[in-house]
Image (tube, rainbow, N blue to C red):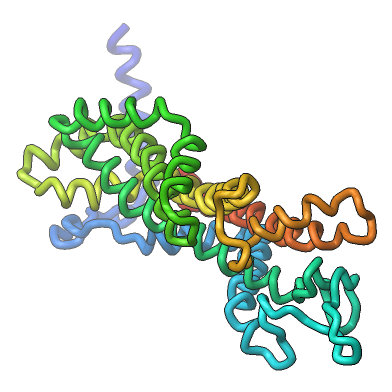
Amino acid sequence: MKKFLDGPVEGLAKSINETIADDAFTFAEYDEAAGEKVAWTDYSYWGSTFRMFFKNKMAVALLILLAAILLFTFIQPHLPGQRPATLINNDPATGLQLMNIPPNDEFLFGTNSIGQDLWSMVWSGTRTSLLIGLAVACSEILLGITMGVLWGYVRQLDHLLTTIYNIADNIPQTIMLILISYILRPSMSTIILAMCLTSWLKMARFIRNQIVIIRDRDYNLASRCLGTPTWRIIARNLLPYLVSVMMLRIATTIPEAIGNEVFLTYIGLGLPVAIPSLGNLINSGRGLLMYESLRYQLIFPAVVLSIVTVSFYIIGNAFADAADPKNHV
């Protein structure tokens, strides 16, 4: 049997050798230097994040709109022909206040019950509310992320911070806001302080939970074994992984802060009436909702508030999705 198989195989090999030329194949040369080269890629995390974000046309459009609103709130008082927000306008002929004038060419948003220009008041109030929201968001970023990272990574602090959180979390945030605003004199700084003292806990707890999930992964254990400083592990290994979830949380903080300002003003513990804000304007306009001719005093500030809050939410969601490395593939 073996003899029978060897015969055809040897014949086939001989015919193949006769068919193929001697120079048909050559030995490959081995370059040791080329073998040591590491593959290079032009991948950039932030570059990919912004490319993904700008693919979302709705988010980009809302970002442009929000930036235009923010810019206009600061330049509006300096434009020609603009009236001060707190100025009470009188009729030059009679000296009477121009009360409840509907929108027209002179007063684009009309006037309120004491003759103030609603156009100027809406933009001044938007500026005030945005400043409150941005201040609260910045404090939440600094305090919430710092405490959250320490809470989740430094095991010795876990019990202490968990106890503090459990005690503070059992007190409703609304009650805390009301108590702080009631004890202190109503002002813009009081509202910001009240919100800053209560808002960072949610962010810290959120970051802590995310840190606990990823702190013991293999690459973090390897970094600790190699003696990498704790601050470097946090800055390089942990925080970049949390960019998407942090941006989503920050995007919801600003509308939430504006909503809290509106609520405190609604119950009489917010900003003084002399300081225009969206909360003051909505609180003044809600009593006129039953009068069809005066509804514009509620509609204009409510529309601006809706545009700002919805824009922040959609932009935050879009940026959070773009910042997720899973979407960069």
